[in-house]
Length: 188
Figure (cartoon, rainbow, N blue to C red):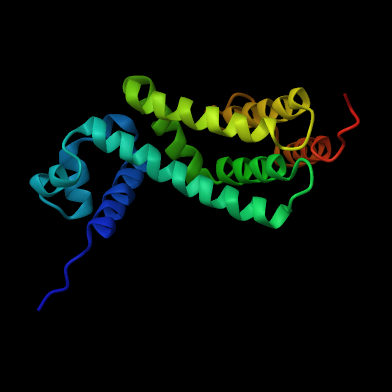
């Protein structure tokens, strides 16, 4: 008797297949047929879980955002409750994520999908609104806290798009400066 996968396991298998295609071949190669084949499903089986490519892209964004947010929560718990703790966790999780070459190439494709699929773009906007709310209640002056978030995001985008990202030694110095800003609430 064969063991059947749960819907959650099948969806995770589909997301991993999508992620592998995006890392290896980019967004242009992410077709429903390619995903079904890579996941070992029939196209009908894939469509059972995701009735359209838009639904698949939205699900993929949520999947990777959930992974990021779980890591963010782990790091925030380790940082404690002092002012700036959540921002330090956000900086660490962001840098950790984007300096992983597999993750960076995946996010290049995901953000390309975001431009094509307005609903995925809206999901990211909603995430950033929630993150900004966290930034503003981080215990630091909201302007300083927002500056820190924007610096982290700028570093993240420079790394992702390869827009003259700093070399690793310089990146470490920059991250240390960002983390120092989260500990010095007397700047403003």
